[in-house]
Amino acid sequence: SAVISQKPSRDICQRGTSLTIQCQVDSQVTMMFWYRQQPGQSLTLIATANQGSEATYESGFVIDKFPISRPNLTFSTLTVSNMSPEDSSIYLCSVGPYRLQTDEAFFGQGTRLTVV
Amino acid sequence: GENVEQHPSTLSVQEGDSAVIKCTYSDSASNYFPWYKQELGKGPQLIIDIRSNVGEKKDQRIAVTLNKTAKHFSLHITETQPEDSAVYFCAADSGSTLGRLYFGRGTQLTVWP
Image 1 (spheres, rainbow over the protein chains, first blue to last red):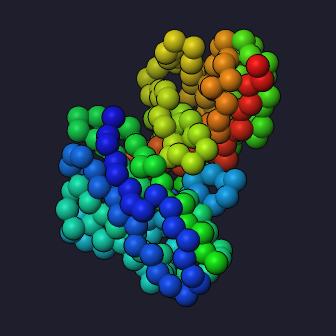
Image 2 (tube, rainbow over the protein chains, first blue to last red):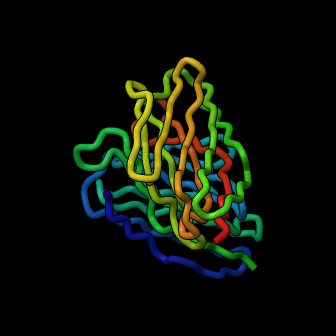
Image 3 (cartoon, rainbow over the protein chains, first blue to last red):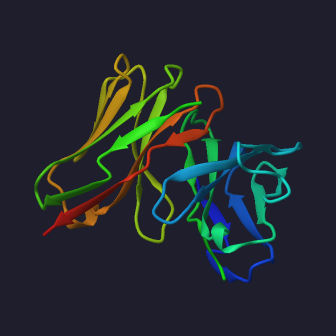
């Protein structure tokens, strides 16, 4: 399976500030995704990180709030901007397809964000 | 887009018993159905998956069945152990974007010793 390093693993931030989360994969992947998991909830896709172009955002998520970078095929960042307590969640990076596999999606360990 | 429903939301079983979690999906274009296990403080881990050209797949104590006509799939865990306690998520692919998944709401499985 993919080795995905996500940093930081957790953080406590003041409201109004921004946090950038990094996702590094040990092999080139076509697709990278960012999900949000609110407390006790399922995973909701924020956006697809496209290499060399703007990210594709899902309904309810906007670039000003969640800017994403994808400078190459192994790395992406998600920024949570102007944070409020409602942004307290686990943020997860996911990749797929990985190497020769066509469907599997793998996840990083997640970033547990608490906004105070 | 795809809509994935998952039941039950919580499941408690005695060690050694079987556990079954069921999911339905709406998009007939979906072809890939993974199951993830998420332990506290960790990211989801892929435990088993099934593709639409297969009706059943087994890996030791874990099995998944798929009924594509009825658009439902199930996870079966036999001889449950306390370390199976976790949240389990089913998912379905988008049918168009490789790697993009739609998730069920999760099942909190508790296995009592």
